Image (tube, helix red, strand yellow):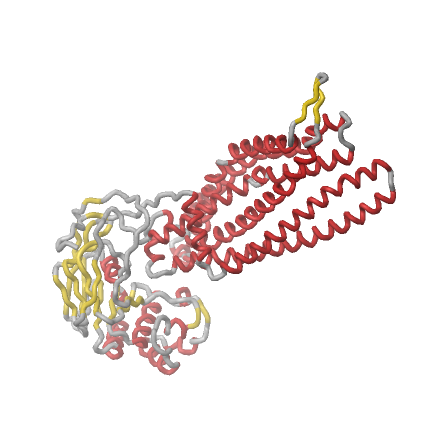
Length: 606
């Protein structure tokens, strides 16, 4: 990297290009190949294929049964009629067992497929800094919960039903094409004293009939792909709005914001209803094609074979057998027509899940800004900033000093004007925002603990919260109780085994104090704080500084904030400034790229 990188440019969220169907299928296939349940999926698929083949054999036998059964009826032969009923009972019983077995296998396959897809998305999403970068990647990062929970489940259901349905139709088609070809080989048409034989006549009739219907169905049903995708987006926005209102009911009540919230929810609901209305309109249009086709199919095979039957070339039983074979072949060929709505839904869901997966791989993509901050290790254990510049949407953030070295044990206050970009600077040091220039030298072999303005308190027991991401043996109850008493949260000492959403149970200041207690128990050597200290004043501030002095003695503490009242505790000061004269860049349209993580171990106070 050059000594003076050109980072006087703003960065905008990445505009992710829509992927192709091939990219989407390849992405999902790669996820399944790497899944721990891939062998289970593979062997279950083999068993289901065997069941489908056995079912097809049973269907061929059942179709062959038609001729002797209907011929016995035509002859009024009671003995033959009863015998054929026994044959039917055996064939139908075998098909019943196969059908129930296939249903159970399909359900288990659907369950495991959802497990594989969802676990893969969660794994990709929870890789270091991925969720943060995705949230800043534009529309693709909105409502990831729906894509991982609802869309992945829906894709599993549709893929299982459509995939095995298509396989079954193909096997039936292969099984009955030969039967129908043989049955129609003797069909001879007598026209004007001439005889005309068309080899495989009913096979060609079925192909032409189903081909026309499939083409019309796709022509009418194709808009459903875009309409379904739009509906899922609107549904996610409505759910997100409801969750946001529910999580802010106290502030909403204090500001009497119910009317505004209601109007916002009504608007979101309205967009969902409009999207659904468009889908229903398209489905009704499609139904005109598919239902008309379905009614014609009731008489189509008889109409096709009737000239030969009325000419006396086949018996009534032969006609019914030919009709049965035609229906089986035609049923296989019309799979596309019957499932055009589901195919459009599957295509839309696949696009949402696969594009989300691709976006997770691409969240580290650089925008038009080709330079990024360089990370390295310092053998002497210090933290250094060499000509550091952080690219931001408003311009370039930098320190007033081009060369900064913070040695072990120092306490440093980094201040800046309001909106100077202090939090973005904090994220840059943590490696969450790597766009910019210059170099950050991390203390070699050390773990940096980053404390955001409001700490992350995972759901669970309070003991688990305090021991979160410790990396050492869990603290004893005695130590925890002592630290809670020091920080002024002694009332929580009796709640160590309570399972709660502590981010909802505790006020913001209490959450910050709990974060300080966690630091006291962890006793890290390097701590970088983002404006969390600015919330403390008076006796509470003195108590916090006393705890840090006692439990983090000898640790390096860097506090980024306003810095009005910490001069004694933080004797050294640095200043962040912003170059607002940066020229904004246009949003980038880029494909995959990756940012290597910082070479030193980095801990985050979540």
